[in-house]
Length: 217
View (cartoon, rainbow, N blue to C red):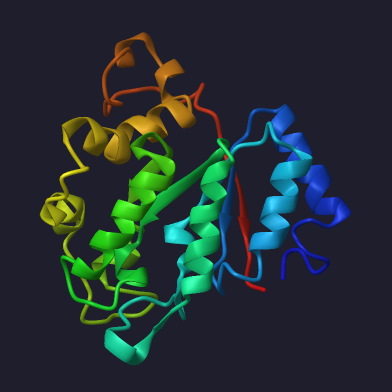
Protein backbone atom coordinates (compact mmCIF):
# COMPACT_ATOMS: atom_id res chain seq x y z
CA UNK A 1 0.00 0.00 0.00
CA UNK A 2 1.22 3.51 -0.79
CA UNK A 3 -0.16 4.78 2.52
CA UNK A 4 0.30 1.97 5.07
CA UNK A 5 -0.90 4.24 7.88
CA UNK A 6 -3.93 5.39 5.92
CA UNK A 7 -4.65 8.25 3.54
CA UNK A 8 -5.38 10.48 6.51
CA UNK A 9 -2.08 9.71 8.23
CA UNK A 10 0.18 12.67 9.08
CA UNK A 11 2.00 12.12 5.77
CA UNK A 12 -1.25 11.94 3.85
CA UNK A 13 -2.63 15.07 5.49
CA UNK A 14 0.59 17.00 4.83
CA UNK A 15 0.59 16.01 1.15
CA UNK A 16 -3.10 16.81 0.83
CA UNK A 17 -2.70 20.22 2.42
CA UNK A 18 0.31 21.04 0.21
CA UNK A 19 -1.65 20.03 -2.90
CA UNK A 20 -4.32 22.54 -1.95
CA UNK A 21 -1.76 25.28 -1.42
CA UNK A 22 -0.32 24.56 -4.89
CA UNK A 23 -3.81 24.36 -6.45
CA UNK A 24 -3.17 20.75 -7.47
CA UNK A 25 -6.27 18.55 -7.76
CA UNK A 26 -5.81 15.20 -6.02
CA UNK A 27 -7.06 12.15 -7.88
CA UNK A 28 -8.03 9.19 -5.70
CA UNK A 29 -8.34 5.73 -7.24
CA UNK A 30 -9.68 3.16 -4.78
CA UNK A 31 -9.01 0.14 -6.94
CA UNK A 32 -9.75 -2.33 -4.16
CA UNK A 33 -12.92 -0.64 -2.99
CA UNK A 34 -14.22 2.72 -1.85
CA UNK A 35 -15.95 1.84 1.42
CA UNK A 36 -12.79 1.33 3.47
CA UNK A 37 -11.24 4.57 2.19
CA UNK A 38 -14.27 6.84 2.50
CA UNK A 39 -13.69 7.89 6.16
CA UNK A 40 -10.08 8.87 5.44
CA UNK A 41 -11.08 10.78 2.30
CA UNK A 42 -13.70 12.70 4.24
CA UNK A 43 -11.20 13.42 7.04
CA UNK A 44 -8.75 14.83 4.49
CA UNK A 45 -11.37 17.12 3.00
CA UNK A 46 -12.36 18.41 6.40
CA UNK A 47 -8.73 19.09 7.32
CA UNK A 48 -7.95 20.80 3.97
CA UNK A 49 -11.20 22.15 2.50
CA UNK A 50 -9.35 24.08 -0.20
CA UNK A 51 -7.93 20.93 -1.80
CA UNK A 52 -9.83 19.65 -4.84
CA UNK A 53 -10.52 15.91 -5.02
CA UNK A 54 -11.25 13.81 -8.10
CA UNK A 55 -12.70 10.35 -7.41
CA UNK A 56 -11.82 7.98 -10.24
CA UNK A 57 -14.05 5.45 -12.03
CA UNK A 58 -17.38 5.94 -10.22
CA UNK A 59 -15.59 5.20 -6.93
CA UNK A 60 -14.99 1.59 -8.05
CA UNK A 61 -18.25 0.54 -6.41
CA UNK A 62 -18.14 -2.73 -8.37
CA UNK A 63 -15.59 -5.24 -7.19
CA UNK A 64 -13.24 -6.63 -8.19
CA UNK A 65 -12.36 -3.73 -10.48
CA UNK A 66 -10.54 -5.71 -13.14
CA UNK A 67 -13.27 -5.03 -15.73
CA UNK A 68 -15.32 -7.25 -17.99
CA UNK A 69 -17.14 -8.99 -15.13
CA UNK A 70 -20.67 -9.66 -16.34
CA UNK A 71 -23.59 -10.57 -14.10
CA UNK A 72 -22.65 -12.30 -10.87
CA UNK A 73 -18.96 -12.36 -11.75
CA UNK A 74 -18.68 -9.03 -9.91
CA UNK A 75 -20.40 -7.54 -6.85
CA UNK A 76 -21.85 -4.05 -6.53
CA UNK A 77 -20.98 -2.53 -3.16
CA UNK A 78 -24.03 -0.38 -2.45
CA UNK A 79 -22.49 0.96 0.75
CA UNK A 80 -19.59 2.29 -1.29
CA UNK A 81 -22.03 3.86 -3.73
CA UNK A 82 -23.93 5.65 -0.95
CA UNK A 83 -20.67 6.92 0.53
CA UNK A 84 -19.66 8.28 -2.87
CA UNK A 85 -22.97 10.12 -3.25
CA UNK A 86 -22.59 11.51 0.27
CA UNK A 87 -19.35 13.25 -0.76
CA UNK A 88 -21.43 15.59 -2.93
CA UNK A 89 -21.88 17.75 0.18
CA UNK A 90 -18.26 18.84 -0.27
CA UNK A 91 -18.09 21.29 -3.18
CA UNK A 92 -14.44 20.46 -3.89
CA UNK A 93 -15.25 16.86 -4.87
CA UNK A 94 -15.47 15.79 -8.52
CA UNK A 95 -16.25 12.32 -9.91
CA UNK A 96 -15.02 10.65 -13.07
CA UNK A 97 -17.74 8.70 -14.86
CA UNK A 98 -15.02 6.69 -16.49
CA UNK A 99 -14.08 3.07 -17.24
CA UNK A 100 -17.70 1.98 -17.59
CA UNK A 101 -16.58 -1.56 -18.44
CA UNK A 102 -15.13 -1.82 -14.92
CA UNK A 103 -18.31 -0.85 -13.07
CA UNK A 104 -21.01 -2.38 -15.27
CA UNK A 105 -22.33 -5.92 -15.12
CA UNK A 106 -23.83 -5.67 -18.61
CA UNK A 107 -22.38 -5.45 -22.12
CA UNK A 108 -22.22 -2.13 -23.94
CA UNK A 109 -24.04 0.24 -23.75
CA UNK A 110 -24.05 -0.66 -20.01
CA UNK A 111 -27.71 0.06 -19.34
CA UNK A 112 -27.30 -0.82 -15.67
CA UNK A 113 -25.38 2.43 -15.17
CA UNK A 114 -28.20 4.73 -16.32
CA UNK A 115 -29.80 5.05 -12.87
CA UNK A 116 -26.42 5.57 -11.23
CA UNK A 117 -25.58 8.36 -13.66
CA UNK A 118 -28.92 9.98 -12.84
CA UNK A 119 -28.03 9.79 -9.16
CA UNK A 120 -24.62 11.35 -9.77
CA UNK A 121 -26.18 14.15 -11.81
CA UNK A 122 -28.67 14.87 -9.04
CA UNK A 123 -26.03 14.79 -6.31
CA UNK A 124 -23.04 16.50 -7.98
CA UNK A 125 -24.41 18.24 -11.04
CA UNK A 126 -22.86 17.83 -14.47
CA UNK A 127 -20.27 20.52 -13.72
CA UNK A 128 -18.58 18.18 -11.22
CA UNK A 129 -18.60 15.08 -13.42
CA UNK A 130 -16.05 14.07 -16.06
CA UNK A 131 -16.20 11.29 -18.61
CA UNK A 132 -13.19 9.10 -19.27
CA UNK A 133 -12.60 5.98 -21.36
CA UNK A 134 -9.79 4.36 -19.34
CA UNK A 135 -7.88 3.94 -22.58
CA UNK A 136 -6.18 1.68 -23.54
CA UNK A 137 -7.92 -0.84 -21.26
CA UNK A 138 -11.32 -0.03 -22.74
CA UNK A 139 -10.12 -1.46 -26.06
CA UNK A 140 -9.53 -4.88 -24.47
CA UNK A 141 -12.34 -4.73 -21.91
CA UNK A 142 -10.31 -4.94 -18.72
CA UNK A 143 -6.87 -5.52 -17.29
CA UNK A 144 -6.79 -8.55 -19.59
CA UNK A 145 -8.87 -9.15 -22.74
CA UNK A 146 -12.58 -9.77 -22.08
CA UNK A 147 -15.87 -9.75 -23.98
CA UNK A 148 -16.36 -6.11 -22.89
CA UNK A 149 -13.67 -4.88 -25.32
CA UNK A 150 -14.91 -1.81 -27.16
CA UNK A 151 -13.80 0.47 -29.95
CA UNK A 152 -12.96 3.92 -28.61
CA UNK A 153 -15.58 5.60 -30.81
CA UNK A 154 -18.28 3.45 -29.21
CA UNK A 155 -17.04 4.28 -25.71
CA UNK A 156 -17.41 7.98 -26.52
CA UNK A 157 -21.03 7.41 -27.58
CA UNK A 158 -22.13 5.53 -24.45
CA UNK A 159 -23.65 8.37 -22.42
CA UNK A 160 -25.63 9.53 -25.46
CA UNK A 161 -27.04 6.01 -25.76
CA UNK A 162 -28.53 6.36 -22.27
CA UNK A 163 -30.94 9.04 -23.60
CA UNK A 164 -31.41 10.58 -20.16
CA UNK A 165 -33.74 13.56 -19.88
CA UNK A 166 -31.32 15.11 -17.37
CA UNK A 167 -28.48 14.88 -19.85
CA UNK A 168 -29.12 17.67 -22.33
CA UNK A 169 -26.53 19.28 -24.60
CA UNK A 170 -25.15 21.56 -21.88
CA UNK A 171 -24.83 18.76 -19.34
CA UNK A 172 -23.23 16.50 -21.93
CA UNK A 173 -20.64 19.14 -22.78
CA UNK A 174 -19.86 19.54 -19.09
CA UNK A 175 -19.21 15.85 -18.66
CA UNK A 176 -17.42 15.24 -21.94
CA UNK A 177 -14.98 18.18 -21.80
CA UNK A 178 -15.97 21.38 -20.03
CA UNK A 179 -15.53 20.20 -16.42
CA UNK A 180 -12.02 18.92 -17.10
CA UNK A 181 -11.26 21.97 -19.23
CA UNK A 182 -11.77 24.29 -16.28
CA UNK A 183 -10.65 21.99 -13.46
CA UNK A 184 -7.26 21.32 -15.05
CA UNK A 185 -6.98 24.88 -16.34
CA UNK A 186 -6.83 24.00 -20.01
CA UNK A 187 -8.33 27.47 -20.48
CA UNK A 188 -4.90 28.93 -19.69
CA UNK A 189 -2.91 26.88 -22.21
CA UNK A 190 -3.03 29.31 -25.13
CA UNK A 191 -5.12 32.18 -26.41
CA UNK A 192 -6.36 29.91 -29.20
CA UNK A 193 -8.33 27.85 -26.69
CA UNK A 194 -10.45 30.70 -25.30
CA UNK A 195 -14.07 29.64 -24.99
CA UNK A 196 -13.61 26.48 -27.00
CA UNK A 197 -12.80 22.84 -26.38
CA UNK A 198 -9.03 22.16 -26.26
CA UNK A 199 -7.59 21.92 -29.75
CA UNK A 200 -5.03 19.46 -31.00
CA UNK A 201 -2.33 22.04 -31.61
CA UNK A 202 -2.64 23.53 -28.13
CA UNK A 203 0.45 23.98 -25.98
CA UNK A 204 -0.02 22.45 -22.53
CA UNK A 205 2.92 24.11 -20.79
CA UNK A 206 0.57 26.02 -18.48
CA UNK A 207 -1.84 23.15 -17.74
CA UNK A 208 -2.22 22.35 -14.05
CA UNK A 209 -0.97 18.84 -13.20
CA UNK A 210 -2.72 16.51 -10.78
CA UNK A 211 -1.52 14.41 -7.87
CA UNK A 212 -2.92 10.88 -8.05
CA UNK A 213 -3.27 8.60 -5.01
CA UNK A 214 -3.87 4.93 -5.78
CA UNK A 215 -5.47 3.06 -2.89
CA UNK A 216 -4.98 -0.68 -3.04
CA UNK A 217 -5.72 -1.22 0.63
